[in-house]
Length: 206
Image (cartoon, rainbow, N blue to C red; front, side, top):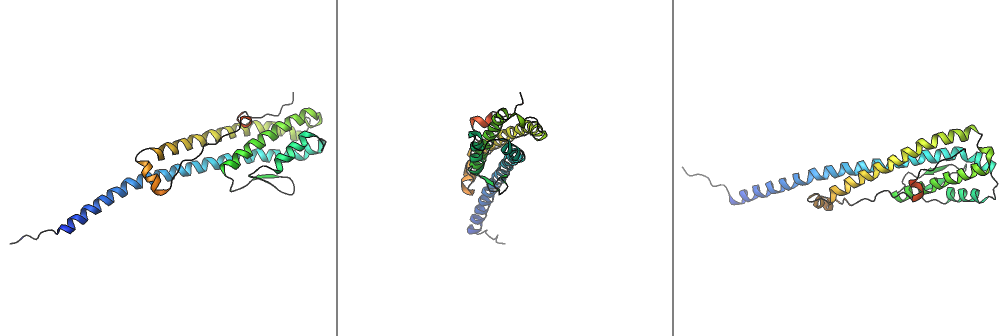
């Protein structure tokens, strides 16, 4: 009885399929991991935006009282007005309320962080220059809220940078860098807070 020979082309095809399957498995794992890290970074950036918006919300609440007390020719008043209307990534409605744009880039968030930090410092100067602001319940609530907000912003920035570092290290490591190149995963920038923004601004009543 003659044994049927397995065709050579079939053997070659099986070998090729095994190699392709192995290569696919070796890529799928890193790809899924990179997607997870990428989503982690996206969430961390969203958290920064949320906390920066909380800072702006408190400034929005306070601004009518600040504007009502200040001389509109005052340099501090002008500086605050300029920051509110001319900061990339921040839009201002007809009532003067500031909002970080939904599609804000990382650079926009850095600009919003620096600008709103400076606004807080200018408000602090205004409080010293216009003592009548100190006694308002709105200002007292503002002072209490700012401290917690600044702590959350600081944490959100740190968490974002940690997530970016984890992502960048992973996609640069061999053999993950091969899969990263195939699927278009590139390095991400860390959040660079300005020198002023790194030191949490406070509003003092001394």
